[in-house]
Amino acid sequence: MFFPSSEGSALGLLIQTLPQVGNLTWIGIRPARSAPLQTVDTVVALTEQGLAGDHYSGKAGSKRQVTLIQAEHIMTVASMLHRRELDPGLLRRNLVVQGINLLALKDRQFWVGEVLLEMTGLCHPCSRMETNLGPGGYNAMRGHGGITARILQGGRLNLGDAVKIQV
Image (cartoon, rainbow, N blue to C red):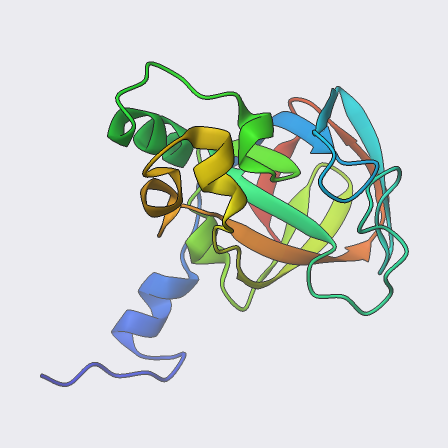
């Protein structure tokens, strides 16, 4: 079966159409490697550096300045683990967003409030998921780990901020 790949094709137009606007529902930072995430209501995103107070901050040029996961995927992982809910901090991602498909942001720039991000890749689960979530935690997270992003324009991230594509 033939699927046209050019931007002007029907499939290309479908891929470029993303009218949904999500929102930021949770923020977490890790002050040190392997430390538990600290839940915050607001954080400063530093251009090309990371989130202020996060151990990844200051690594200019890193493709993993911010990690994001969908709230909808957290519910899916919880279901696979036969739980009613999961603490987002256990998943070791910085931002939880709801209402927008993060995978649709591939090769795109997008806004979270006043901060401009660019998706840099998938955020695959690590062995800590087995420790944090219990037996099967790693496999439950496979395909649901979210994305990594680079900060192109810094600013303040606040709970409730809109998440939308750069137009």
